[in-house]
Image (tube, rainbow over all chains, first blue to last red; front, side):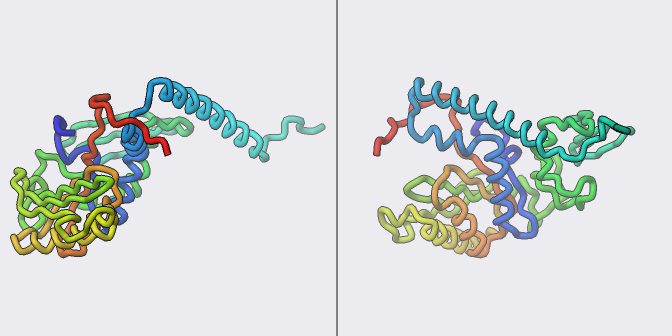
Length: 87
Length: 188
């Protein structure tokens, strides 16, 4: 990040000398931004065919997980308003 | 700094910097939370209740005088660069302009070959760098880490153990926007 202003992004202050907590927070921020997995992936070259396969797989996984979460949220909604009041 | 105003069912989130400029504002209803709020909400623990000096974000270059470490503002503090490769860990302490003061690595501490790529070697490198830096009069340091190696965390811990106070941790891992082609994949 040589062309950017330094010490603004990807920076965490250390509170009360707790270096571990600050490092954990930094790691969490980087993981959320996808930097750690990007660096790991770029360690070795990924051929374009493998890259396309991986992107396709990640897409399918994302759709599957979203649908499954929807289903679980629906099934776990046990307290509902009584639709047939009086019957 | 941020503030939340609630207007009946909607919440208005405003993010300000200390000079009052708005970084970001949004209206979030109860069910729909925008991405940036989700992204940084784990950093904002106590909404609107945090003490003025204890922010998780670094002070901006323009704002000075509010926080002091041994009479230095954040921009004047020394920097400890930690380069954590997969085979070794280098620690270099420079001043705020970039002039090098102390330079240690796992190799200079007497480790050889595979033992250099261990967290313990990185910790010893950090401790030795911190002791040499204190001899040169460095008390507070902001750390810049680069690379994802085994000595990434233990070098910072070694610095702290060696007697130098760590003020902030930054990450400067180089992420190319598809620049140089890395080496071919290993087949094991």
